[in-house]
Structure formats: C-alpha cells, structure tokens
Image (cartoon, rainbow, N blue to C red; front, side, top):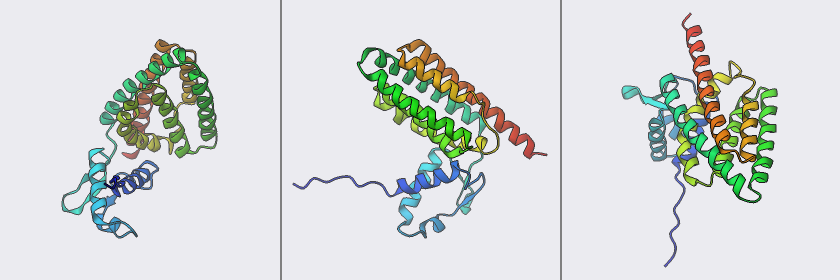
Length: 230
C-alpha cells in the first residue's frame, strides 16, 4: 500500500504572512482585512484564507467587525501581561533545564555557549543599526536556544502562540522607542548562568528578564496611548 503523506496546510503561509505584516507594522491596529481581496492573490483560494483568519482570531490578532469582515485588533495591555506571565514561567523552566543539562551532559555547555555567543553578537548588531525586525528575531532565537537546550520538545510548541502575540507588542514599541539598553546584557547573563550549569540563577535571571520586559513594554505602550490622546 502506498504511504499517504500529509500535505502542508495552505493556510499556514497565509497566516504567517499576515502575522509578519502585523508585527512589522505594515498592518496597523484597525486595518481592515477583506477576505475576497486576500483570496484574489495568485495561488490563494478562499478556504485557506478562512482557515488563516480563524487562526488569527484564536491568537487575538484580528477581530470581527460585523458583516464587514475582520480588522487588526488594538493591543490589550492586560492580555499582553498575561502572555508575559506564561512566557516567564516557560522561559524560567527552559533556562533551569538547560543549565542542568549543560552541567550533566558532556559537550552541552559548549554547544549552548557557541550558539549563544553568536545570537548575542547578532542581537547587539541589530540594536546598533536600529533594525527592529532583527532585534525581535534574535530575541526569539535566544529563547528558542534554551527551549531546545531544555530537552523538552513541548516547551517551544507551548510558547509559540505567546511569542507571536508578544512579537507584535515588541515591534510596536521598538519602532518608536528603544527598550532598555541592558536587554542584551541580561541575555548574556542568562547564557552565562546556563553554560556554568547554575540552574537556580539561570531560572531566576530568565524569569526576572521576562517580567521586567513586560513592565517596560507596558510602560512604553501606555505612554504611546497617552500621547495619541492629545
């Protein structure tokens, strides 16, 4: 019998394209998404568009506006805080488990150190040239390194929807106001604690890093909202 291989969903490329456009500011809060216009693009039919829209609604990226279709949602600061609380818990767990494996598995510390140094270099370079997209990408890569280093394949999968939401929040802030310059210093401290095999310090640093990032983003977005009101 011929093996039947699952085909990749056509909705995923559409979904990721729209998420990227929201995160990098090409689609701003309130932007109207018309399914018929999206489906008119070459190689895209109505069904994957509808599936992509359902995923976007589930992630809180878009909302219905009656019979007029969908629009990009405004950022909800309370919802962002909830996402960060979960990310902090997952990140702390990943850092702890990665540090334990770096301590107990031969060669693991060197692998994390080598990849971590490269991500730190790229992240700082992105900050120096004010490249918002690359700053977000490097931030995600550093956390992904620790999800992978933890040895738990479910961590990255569980964190993914929270990252999609928070990437948008990070993009909104970084396009108009620089986050604290110490963010990459904090990243370096986390990697150092993991590589040295110190799970307590690694977990504490990562948890504090994520929660402080939430404070910084909420404050910056609140300031933007106040300025827009005048």
